[in-house]
Structure formats: structure tokens, C-alpha cells
Length: 279
Ligand code: HPA
Image 1 (cartoon, rainbow, N blue to C red):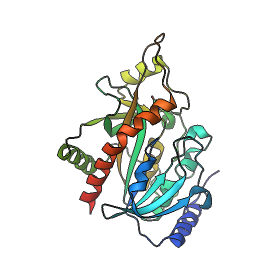
Image 2: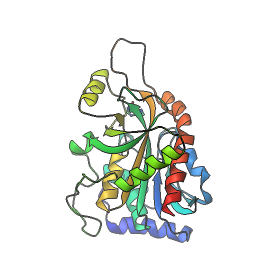
Image 3: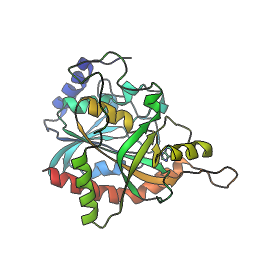
């Protein structure tokens, strides 16, 4: 299915009719991080199923509501519950909400995800500021920007050298420093899932320069940059990537959800600090 600008506009109109709040910042919440949407003030929640064109989340730990409200005085629109490629949706479907947020006027998109730590220095519970990515899924040809390009939405060929906005990264680092919060930095590797990586894959991704690995975020980032939205993204390290066979270790979704609880307060501090500076 190929969406057009009219489809995004139809969903945006629906949301505008339900709430007259303007929005400045879009927020996407990763596995186990949905509770962050509950700290918004003056919330209006709209279930995805009511919004024309919106995909439905099918994974435990991922709700399915669009939440509009205010955080630190900033009008925010939040995707509480992300939809992934491995659920059987196309790259265009999973990024539909980002296009709609753009239609509604966001200038900044902040993304969070749960990720496996490839970098040996990282521990479970660490937060990594994403400063670059390796998009295995997109490089292999599964990409939301494929298909006919609508020049009203963005350019055909999008540069990727200034993807994770430098000013926003510096802001996040200063918020972390002010709050005595250790903020790692590194390269996020996007894979399709739903299986976790094999130990040989983990060693390969590490060798290629990846610091964290996960199954989301980069598709949304591509659409954001296509529409010239500024991007800030954080990975919460929920598990250490397992790099050897024949050990008793195994990664599980339960482990990811369990660890994401440690990450919620850290991400809330970072989000609040960054938003406060955007006022
Ligand atoms: N691999 C891929 N995706 C993930 C992981 C992982 O180890 N942890 C959380 N999301």
C-alpha cells in the first residue's frame, strides 16, 4: 500500500478535530517506555484504531494510543506504542504516524528505543545518545522512502551526514551533566527482528562499528529527515548482546521489558531537560 499526502492530511484533520492543541515536538516511545506518555499534562488520548490510516501495535509492552499534551510547557504529541516491521507492516505503514506529526506541525522529533548493548563498555540500564546509525534494513531495500517521491514532503535523495541534530545532542549532553547522569554516545544498528541476533551476528555488528542494536527508530528517522524535522534519539540498553555460543545466556523480550523500568526515570530526566531548553 502506498500512502499519499492526502492520507496523511486526512489523519491530521481527524486529530485536529479531536483536539485544538498545537504541537511542537513529536515523541516516540520504545519497548517498556510507554509510561513516559503518562507524565504529559492536559492529555488527550486517541486510540490508533480510530485514526484513519494508523497501523495497530500487536506487541506486549507497546500500547496503541496517540497522546497529545504538554511537558515542561511544550506542546507534545506522543506515539505511545510503536509499530515494527516484524509485525508484518510495511516501512511506509510504520512511519505513517511520523508523517502525520509533521502535518500537525512538529519541528523536532525525539525517539527512544530499547536496544542490545554491543559496545563492551555499556551496561544494562545505560542510556546511549544516538549520533549515527547503520541501517541494515534500509540498505537491503526495505525503506519508507522507497517508491514515488512527493516533493511536497521532501527531496528524493536525503543526506544522512547531519541526521542526529548536533545542537540537540549538545543540549542532551548538558542536561545529562547537570543531572549527574551518565550518557553514552554511539552508533545504533537497525535490524529487522523479530529474532534476536545470533552470536556471530553480534560479533559482526560490533566489528562494523555498532554500539547498540535494535529493531526500530531508523525508519522513523529517515521520514523525519525527509521532511526536514530535527531529530534527537536515545537507546536504552536493556540487555547485553550475547556474543558466544554454548553459554547459558539467552536474550528475551521479558528481560528487555524488565530492564526498561530502570531506564524510565533517566529518560524522563533527559526529556524534561531538553524540552525545558526548547521553550
Ligand atoms: N537486539 C535487537 N533488538 C533489541 C535488543 C537486542 O538485543 N534488545 C532490545 N531490542
